[in-house]
Image (cartoon, rainbow, N blue to C red):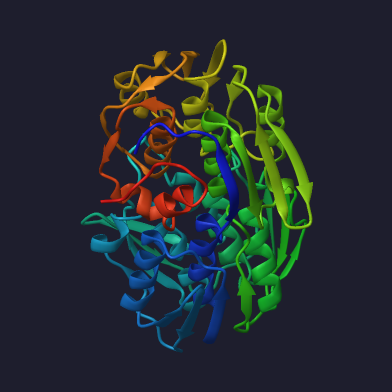
Length: 410
């Protein structure tokens, strides 16, 4: 890719990766054919499909629609060969324990940006009556019947909330999840489960109350738009200038991000089709601090750091969710960015332009952030390990090229 001038045009936001994967896992809760629409054509969705097929589920994809036919008998094993490729695989644990009372899941792999222990998942499920053992790199879980309980999460973990929510819908009695994560993807999962017949109260709040039911029914459901994809395009606009319309974007899902971009100088207008964004001048540096939703998502941070590298002034960036999610900074420094990082903090001093260089993507969002940086660089930038980007984006290069960016995928 090369440094690009003003962007101009419309971009349609696809279905949310972080929702689609969990809805696919949740389909295990009901025998029969569940259909998901607005599903992005990305590597992680393909891996989740392979994982479900390994359990005996039949999956057919047509365009943005996936039909998931769940048999009465499921092989409750998530093998290492698939789980190591995608950390989100751990969310099959809850539905398997709820539906058939046993599961064996390999310890998860996924993005390389520090430890993300699954202790809260297991502790919460244990409070519902599950027992676990560990051997040969696998977690084996058993539960004759999950029993509703009150579970308090020490931290509003998205993954733990999802696993507990999916487990509790078929548990006996009432489960209360306190300090639950509130991300839009959690709300999407709760709405999906409710449409299947689950009884959930407190959707969108930090206190979820679930009354278990005997069975759930398959449904047809549309995945919400991907707020992280939208944030990526807004960051590209931040460094290139111009005007783009994000069709289907949900501004209500990214209010804190939009406030931060407006503080930097981006002009944002919500309309019936989504979001119109305009940048006419060099943006101003701001401070950035990640927090659980409704705070600023940690997935937004790499894009904002890329935007800050060419903004006017100095910005302080603080990572409060994951330790070690600054590895991409070394790549940005190779491109001429002035960044000093220590622990959970980074100070970014904006420069006029970056300089194109060969760089390496360490994870999905870091790879996309390097694409954003490449659009703000003189000369050519080549990103290796671009397969990480494919895990979370459907034709990122093609979409950016359609609005005037100079990006090609080789």
